[in-house]
Length: 343
Image (cartoon, rainbow, N blue to C red):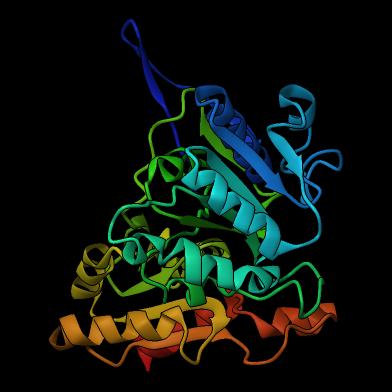
């Protein structure tokens, strides 16, 4: 089940829903293109973003439209081109830095953590870093351990950063522009399994609020709290459970830093049960933070302890069947919910 967005237009006395089918990849490309048309300070830089069209074909065709000054292929040095992006942001531009996979961002960790995230503080409030960094995250494409982990929870640990995890077509299309308007660095994590996902997008896209989580499905028996690819798996599980009479509420966090505590805490207060679904590792991950916040804030609303379903704590396997076993799947979510609801 895909979350979809709709746009309702009044045509005389008739209401028409005007949408178009588009892939997640195309939605991201449109977002980049729109931003570049709206603001001449915006440019894209990264490995293979130009002539090759991007590792995941997101930027295909943009070089021909905007030229090499604004679609800039970089050397294979994440530290160097991320640092260049920081410098460009300090110089008044609005760079979009693309890092192929979140694993490769470790090579730019010094630039991201020690410069982009801390410069406003270290300068006594004098220098903002209006930088957007996009990167692919997650497994399920048989790219093995150096290309497939979900490390967005690491970055959600860092003060000074905003961390976005668009799951829907609407968010993939709409999150980039408000991220570019933010005076501080924003990291956008796009799960690589979502690029081929198709969904409905309004012909006239509406603004997206990057500060709020979203209730993607209402329910009364349990709150499923997730983000990214976990949203689709949770919605699929919810359909199966609904046929059994179990109604779960599915929360799409959308932003991991800062977390929108109000939305998921209200949900847990209503359902009295919480299951967190996260492809990242369990130890020290974002699921642990969510569990702690739920316990700290709505402990007496809980009918049983918060549960977590996370990625296996191993390097991501290459073999398809092992890779699938290493991350949460709909069947596992269904089994966990059944156990929590029925005991």
